[in-house]
Image (cartoon, rainbow, N blue to C red; front, side, top):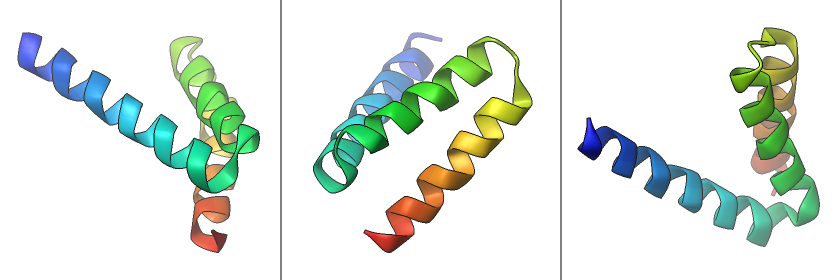
Length: 60
């Protein structure tokens, strides 16, 4: 369980820094929207933000 949480934290840190360097504040905002959507169990928000984030990362 501890290994899973540590791996998740490292992945979140990596995605955050990649989003910030490639997309700036918009990337960080989209990652935050995905996290909030997952925590609030709002599939529409999480999926929508993840799709937009993926499209922007493909463009970058």
